[in-house]
Length: 418
View 1 (cartoon, rainbow, N blue to C red):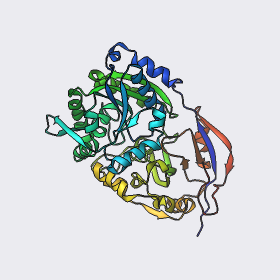
View 2: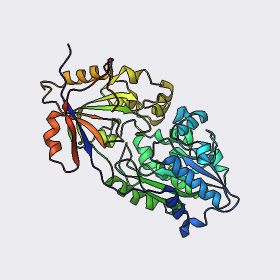
View 3: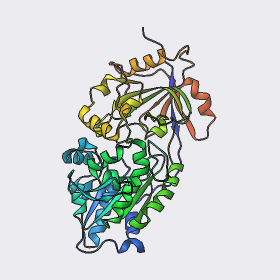
View 4: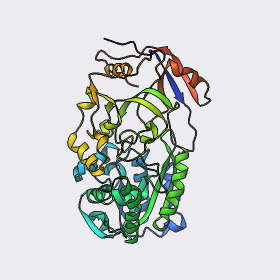
C-alpha cells in the first residue's frame, strides 16, 4: 500500500569562512618561506603524494606544487598514497587519481604507481614501518593532504599529513598493519608510524589543506617535516571550526542522494550523520537520526560502496553498482566490517522512503521530520519536510527557497537531480 509522503521545501545554508582565490599564488608564496626554500634543490627527483579523497582543488594544488618544483630545477612526479583504496592495485589507484582530475597531462608530472614497499624501521611498540618503494627511491617526498576531523575517532592528530605519510605512503601493507588494531591502530599507532617515516629523512615537507564549510580551499600551508606534528594539531583544531553540519539535530528520516569515497573515507561522513558503527566505540549523541537512506553511489567511488552499512535502507540503483572486491578489500583492511553490511534494498527512492516512514511508528506525514541532502560533503542546499519549517525559520543562517510541494520522482520512482 502506497503511503502519503510529507511535503518538502528547499533550504539554503549560508556558511561563512575564508577562501583562497588564487591557488598558484598561494603555493608560490608558501614555497618562498625561509624554512621551505632550502628543501627543494636543483636536480632532485621529488615525489608528490596524491590520496583517494575528494579534496577541493586537489588537482590544481598538485599542479601548482609540481610547477614550483620545476622552477627550482628539480623534477616532480606523483605517487598514489592511499593504502588499500583503488582495489589495492597500482592500476586501480591511478584510476582513482584520474577521477579527481589528477592526470599527467593536467599536472605536468608523471604518475608512478606501485604497491611495492620498503621496510624502514619499527615503532617503539614493534610495528614495522613501510614506505612506498618508488617514493623511497626518490630524493624526497612532499606530502599533500587535507587536514580534517577523522570519521572514526577524536584526537590531537586525525586525518591529515601524518595519516598520508603512514597509512597512505605505506600502501596496502602499512594500512593492514595499522588497521589490524582497529581504532587503537589509527588513533595511537598511526602517528608513531609517521614519526618513524619522518626520521628516515625522505619526507621534505607537508602541504596541509584546510577546507571551509562550502567545500572550498580555506587555507594552504607548507610545513617543514620537523614541524608537521605540531602544526597539524593546531590546523586540525582550526579545521573543526569550519566543518559543515546538518541544520537540525533531530531527524526521523535522512535521505542521502549519494554516498562515496569522494565525499568521505567512510562514504558518509560520520561527523555529519552521527554514526560510527565500530565495534566497542561509543556512538555520537548528535545528530539523532532514526533512519538513514542511501540512494546512490558516486561514479568516483568506482564501485567501492564502503559506508553503505551506515545506512538502514538503500536502493537497487546503489546495490547494482557495488564492486564487492573493491569494497571488501577496503573494509577488511580497515576491520570495521559493519560499514560494508548491506541494509534492506528497495526498488526505488520512493519505496525506500515509504519503508522508513512505515517504520516511524505512529507519525503522520505532517509530523515526520524528513531531510534530504545531496551527500555529506555538500550541505549548502537541502530539502526539509514541513514539520521542520518552523525551526528553519528561526535561524539566521538558513533560507527557505520556494514553496512546500510534494516530493517529485521520475517514472521509475527515483528522485530527479538534486
